[in-house]
Length: 55
Image (cartoon, rainbow, N blue to C red; front, side, top):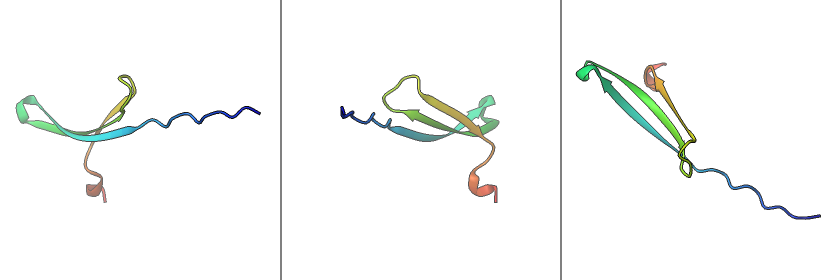
């Protein structure tokens, strides 16, 4: 039986951002999750509030 090498596991990075719009009158938070070795594998999601404030 031929032995196969396991596929490499992608490396992910995450960053949090506070995005300000309307000349500083409005802002929101966003989270970006990206695969470090790819220009097309990423996800950005806005959030309503910080998780610790939801309790």
